Length: 171
Image 1 (cartoon, helix red, strand yellow):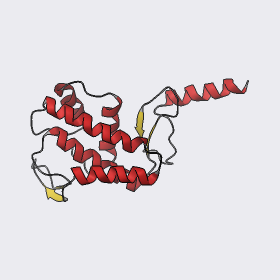
Image 2 (cartoon, rainbow, N blue to C red; image 1 turned 180 degrees about the vertical axis):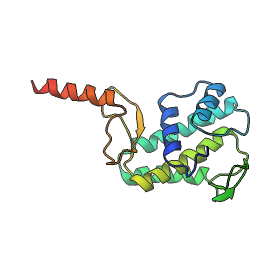
Image 3 (cartoon, rainbow, N blue to C red; image 1 turned 60 degrees about the horizontal axis):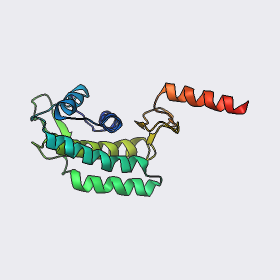
């Protein structure tokens, strides 16, 4: 599977990695493979470090309160990470579009995928379609892929917890 056109799948991978940062190269590789990413090179400790840097920058995009600030932060990521678009059939499994240079280590690859994927997600679904759970003590990041675009919670469990809290507060 290709993470192409870079949108929903890669934004969900970014949220997963940000919510539970990979501790080592093996974990990073396993989680990327589980998300459908084809790894062309061995994953190193430098890839883990680079991934953490990418996630630090991405979380600033997620936490930006203002649309222009969010777009500006993401544009800086795009300028540093993305290359000109190109068609490729690098795995001999069909032509597809890449917004990155070939043969990059995983950390650099994730920088490109997360930057472009987030931009496509926000441009296609709406600039507010990233967030943190509305439950105060929960800091989980989610990508809103709902039909209505009004997701406020990371899970049904947190939504239920907040509903119970509001109901009890009315008593």
